[in-house]
Length: 320
Image 1 (tube, rainbow, N blue to C red):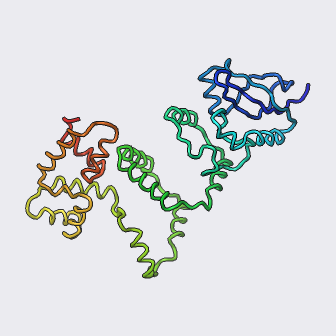
Image 2: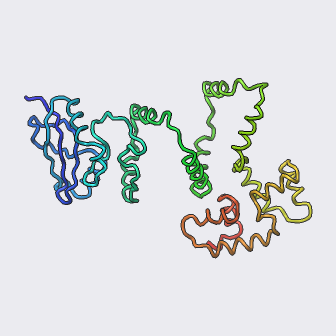
């Protein structure tokens, strides 16, 4: 029986003319005989599901003896320029062992996928385990890459907006449940300890202090949970004589810090409590109930989404 051969094949969608090129070890002794294989790429598999196998035709372009020869030939045919074309189902360049392409070198750079395409990609990748070899390639491709200040700012703002939304609250709750009851291993504790050794008895230089101060300007230095609790305390505290002093004692800080906190995080909460409820109920009534409406309220009221949910549950459940 003749040995099986590697082939470079071309699969064509007979309805729209879109093609797919790949390498395959043919299961038949005759490399030109069709063995039922049409391709294994994500896009070609989705297309086969959509149009049906009968609407695809595979033809053998080249027959090769070794896998290495086949990979080299595929690399020649499935180039980055070829992948960028809309006339094919190939998503990655040929050859199989090429490095991970990032930025403008990636064939998909600048492309905006439709919701339908993103859903298909999501379903195809669910439960998929990425091999350790691929993970190392991805890791090595990112080593030494420095993000611009503008890029870092976009990432920071995106995360802040996400965690200020209801989805962020759900994520935090999931993370809390996953971490609950977990303890660092002895090895991890030692690593953390070693990373902090060497600063005992030392002081930051004046230049270092200045840099730290400038980098922290405008940053949220309080934990989100502390801010949320304090905003709730302000909402529930009767606005009678000495109410800020009572909060200062409760929070174990001085009156001026209470005033600074209110100015920064709760500027609308020092109104008479009944007035706050009245104004906010009116806001809830008038705002369109489309996705993100609670986030828009949190920005308007200068509080986080958790406080918005708390207020609605306690004072405006009849308006939802």
